[in-house]
Length: 189
Image 1 (spheres, rainbow, N blue to C red):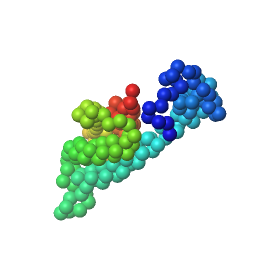
Image 2: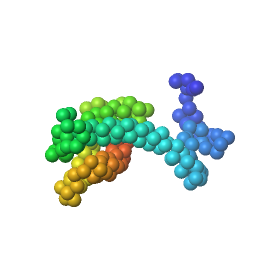
Image 3: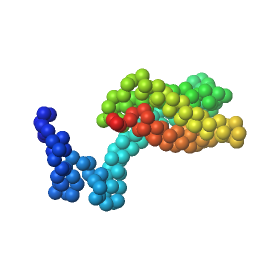
Image 4: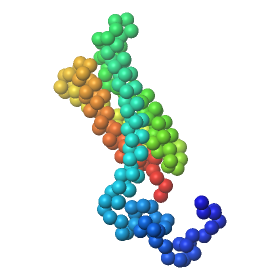
């Protein structure tokens, strides 16, 4: 481990020295000018594999929670059981409520686990961007559910879960993954 007060060869003005593996000492593997496309692809995959898998794990757990809560609100009545729930006539409001709860859980999971290795951003800015991204993502998800309910006229358990929960979740999760990594939890620049 280098000492904190040690001067590197680059800082001293010396040319970088090659390592036994062909990369220049201090460079990240796969980033050297002489690396092959295959090694760059492998390095890129390794760099993105862990955050992608943890993001999908957080999203998967929150997806299950969101689906269960939505189905309870829309299709389960405490007095009657399964059928038409308390919010059956208001599916968009029910979905908006479940998205709000799920978004809070998603923020915590992604801040602490998926992007936990990144520097802590200014909390107010990070939360504001997170809310903006999630409002847009919620609009995408609600658009899928609304199209199914009000344009196609489908209001069954299966139709709501396919359109609002499954398709809507895929569209909104894809949007969230790209924007979280780039704007909400950015790498140090």
